[in-house]
Length: 247
Image 1 (cartoon, one colour):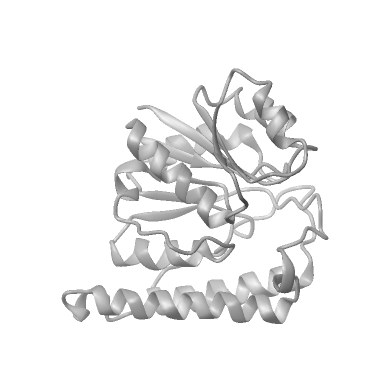
Image 2: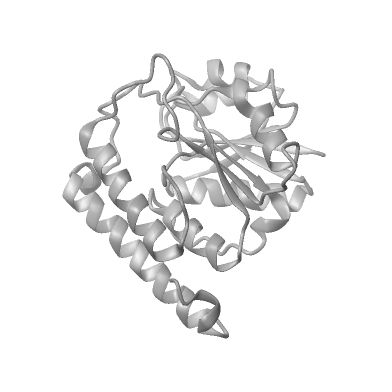
């Protein structure tokens, strides 16, 4: 089984080399999607010869970076894609465990193994910013109720995907709400989904979402708008609404 690890990156000069050095201990094939970084990230990536790099000339958004990683994995013919953030909040040592989980080492094959920071507690877990925890919990509850899922963390970026399943996605949401579009489309395509416990680590609690999204109420409204739009789209595209009546 050939697997690829992808890291979406935007202005991560302070973390990128250290994170990549650690990721490469567990993954032979690594691609970084530089989403229009304006600090020293691009230069740091240029100096490496052990990774592949996709460059967005302009900052398009977190969802756009993941969409480029999906396309790369499909076109290159990988079996599994692991995504991991580059801000030091995820632990690369867990990559082999995600690969084992999605490949059926536990007796069941999955299309998506999604990291969860709330599935279980770990020693040394961070205390998340209250607004982020509340919004995550609220959106996760809505997704579970509308899609019939049993998630505990709708927004964790540490995931493993079965690459053939990625062909069923149509990612058009380029911002931070992209995971909501993903959950709706994955449920509509009957993906086999399981969560995987990962430590809860916040290294930069004041990290910006950009512009108005730093306001918790506006961010929540944005997430709800994207989720409602995607649910409506799923209903319209379904040939038989009985198949997605739960949406």
